Length: 114
Image (cartoon, rainbow, N blue to C red):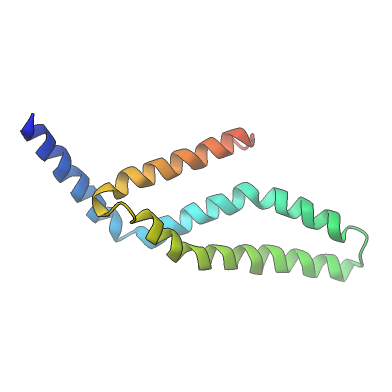
């Protein structure tokens, strides 16, 4: 039993160390998935607020929200997400990432986006 635990512990550490070099890309991926899950709701809200405005105002709002707003959120929150993913340490990074993607999939399923 101790050998099995040592093998599992070694596997978790090796996977965590391997994933650690890709952590920025993985955090960006998670943030983009989150933004894409809620982008439709945000755009609908914005559309309701600017629907009767001039064409230029509508286009500017769309560009500000999508390009700068969503882009800023992804770039600004990705380093914070890295810290959150490493909260349990490198050993549990693989499990934490699996849990994060499972949660994203659950949210997508509940929002009928699958």
